[in-house]
Image (cartoon, rainbow, N blue to C red; front, side):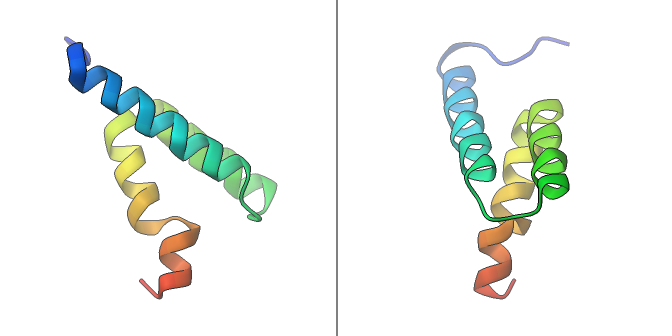
Length: 63
């Protein structure tokens, strides 16, 4: 597997860091935070997209 390189890799890294910081600073339960952080770390692009679509803010929007 090749991995993420170049500008795409930097964008993925920045978005993942932003997502993890948002998860840690959220009011969600500790177990939920741990699961989201692990998903984002294990699956950088898919984890970020899942968090964006199904995370706490998505629940607040009624998705």
